[in-house]
Each structure stands twice: as C-alpha cells, then as structure tokens.
Image 1 (cartoon, helix red, strand yellow):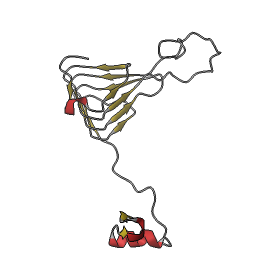
Image 2 (image 1 turned 180 degrees about the vertical axis):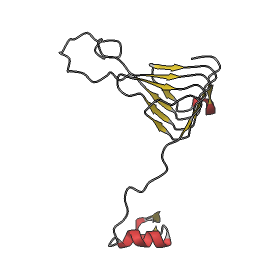
Image 3 (image 1 turned 45 degrees about the horizontal axis):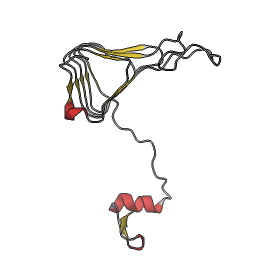
Image 4 (image 1 turned 120 degrees about the vertical axis):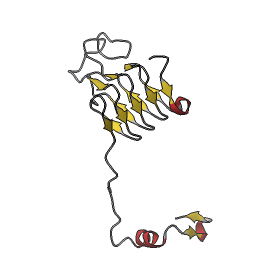
Length: 148
C-alpha cells in the first residue's frame, strides 16, 4: 500500500484482507470489500497437517488480489478473488459503485454490475399486495399506526 492511497469518506466501512496488493494513486470509496486469502480446493487434509498463519494447509495456494496503479473503486463495490487464484485489476481501471467483481479487470476499462432484475412477483390472488401496489403503503390503525 502506498502513501498516495485515497480512501473516500475516510475509509468508512472498507474491508481489505491481508492478501491484497494495492498500487499507487488508487481511490477506494466507502464500504468497499476486497476479499482474498481462501485456499484452492483440494483433497481433505488429515488432522494435524502443517498449516500456514491463515490456517490453510501449506501446500495449497491462497487467493490474492492485485490492484494496479490508478484504479478507482466505487462505493460498496465487492471484489472477491476466486479460491487459490490471483485476481488482477488492471492499471487505470474503474469499478462502478455496487459492482461485484469475481474475475480479472483489464487495464483502462470500466466495469459495473448488471442492472436490476425482478426475482419475485406477487401472485394475482394476493389481495393485500395488489392493494399496496395500487395505493402505496397504508397505516394499520390496529397495529399502532405502523406502515403495512
């Protein structure tokens, strides 16, 4: 980590695992997670096998993240290195706010996560959900005025 690392909003909520290498003039905004250090999957190890300081078997490669110079990482982005592999974010790349990155990012590119998608929709027989959709939230006087 270099002295010219910029942490937006004073680095509030930023999580960086120890297997992360950060280049020069990198901007990281609040609530960013850089997760690395998981060992590659391998055969089960016997109890008492040699372990490194992270608790992984010595002969298993740990994942890493390499962030090259001039990278900008937006608020709430999550970068997760695949097990036992190095994930690289290329020089001058930009990661959009809220993006989830699980693969290498080429130099001088901008990545964002997919747009929103609907994962569930109320069935036509659900009268309360239909009423709420048509009129918006209402107050339940019997429940002490809470929104329903």
